[in-house]
Amino acid sequence: PPLTDVHPMTTEFAAPLAYLVSRYPAVSHTFILREVIRLRELGHRIHTASINAPDRLLEAMDPAERVEADATYFVKADGARGALAGLAFWAVRAPGKLLGAIVQGLRMGRGLRGLAYAVEAAMVARWMRRHDMAHLHVHFGNAGASVGVLVKVLTGCHLSYTIHGPDEFDDVSGQRLAMKMHAADAVVCISQFARGQLMRISAPLDWAKFQVCRLGVDPRQFTFVAPAEGQSHIRMLCVGRLTPAKGQVLLVQACAQLRDTGLDFSVTLVGDGPDRTRVEQAIAELDLQQHVKLAGSLTQDGVRRALAQSDIFVLPSLAEGIPVVLMEAMSSGVPCVSTPVNGIPELIEHGRTGMLATPGDAESLARHLLSLAHNEGLRREIALCAREKVRSHFDLARNVQQLSGVFAGFPRAPVTLQS
Image 1 (cartoon, rainbow, N blue to C red):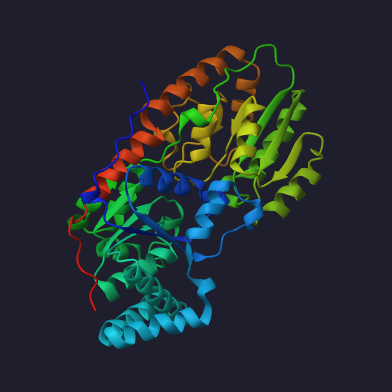
Image 2 (cartoon, rainbow, N blue to C red):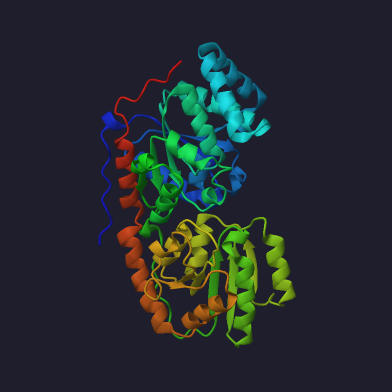
C-alpha cells in the first residue's frame, strides 16, 4: 500500500507539548528523535527535556541529533544553580505543592533518590512554566516517569506516557508502575503485549487510558535490495546494545555451531554496552575471532550501510519491546531471525516475515540461521513479505499520524499551570 500522506494539524490544536526522556538524544533511542521530528512536521510544538546528558559528544552525532541536543533542556546539566532556582520558584508560588511533591518523591524513591526526583520535577516544572506548557509526555515508565508524576503534583499538568517494555515490567512494584498508570491521563503502548501487561497490573478503571500506537520507520530512508543469489559467504548482522537481554552471548554460542557445520559466514555485532566483556570472552573461548567482529556503536547512516552489506539480520533477544532495528532490516530486504518474546510476534510471523528461534536456545538459533543461509528462495520470499508487513503496519508516517491524533485529543484549552 502507498505511504500515508502527512496532513499538518491546524494551529488551534497545536498546544505546546513537553517531551521528557531519561536520556535524549541516545543512540539506542533514535526512534524518539524521528517521532519528534515527524510530529513537528504535523504542526505540533514540541520542546524536549532530558534528565541526563546525551550518550555521545556532539561531533559523534548525526546532524539531526546535534540540532536536538542544542535545543534540549538537560536537567542534571543545569546543576545546583538550576536545582535551587527550581525549588525557590515553587517555594514562593506553591509551597504546599512543593512539600507534597517532596513527600511523594520520598515515598517513590526512598531517601536521596526520591528527593532527587522531587528536585528534578521542580526544575522541569519551572522549565514548562517558562515555555507555557501544560502537557507533559514521558517516554518509558522509568525514572523519567517518576519525575513526570511529581511534575503533575506541582502543576496539575496533563500527563501522558509512551510505555515500551520490557524494562518497565521487570520491577513493577519498584517502579511503582501501577501508581504511575493511575496518575496518567493517557498512556500510549507500542504493542498489544505492552497494553496487556499494563492491564495486568492496573485497575480496570485505568484500562481505557491505554492505547496501542506502534513505532515505525520511514521505508523511503532504506534501500530495499532483494537477497542476492549465489552467495557463498553469508554475512550476518546484529545491531543492539550489548546487554544480557539482547542475547549476544547466545549468538556467539550459536556461531560456534555454525562454524562446526562448515558454513562460510561472518557476523558483525554493532553496539556497545555492559555485556561487551562477556561477549569478547565468549568469542575468545570459542575461537571465533575469524567469524565474529565487534564494530561498536554506529550512527544511523552507519547502520544503513551495514544493512546494505548483510544477508541475514539476527537479534536473539530474551526480552524486548518491538525493536525498530528489525523494522529497518525488513525495510532493507534483509531477512531476520529473532525470538517470539514480548511484542516481536506482532512484527514477525514465523516462516513468513522472518524466523523465530526458541528464546535462550543456541541450537534453535543456529538451526534457523542455517535454514536461511542454505535457502536463497526462502530468504527472498521472507524479504518481500517482510517489506510489506512494515509498509502496512509499521510505517512511521502512518503511526505518527495516529499518535498525533492522540495528542490532538488532549484538552484543547489545557489546564492552566497552577501556582
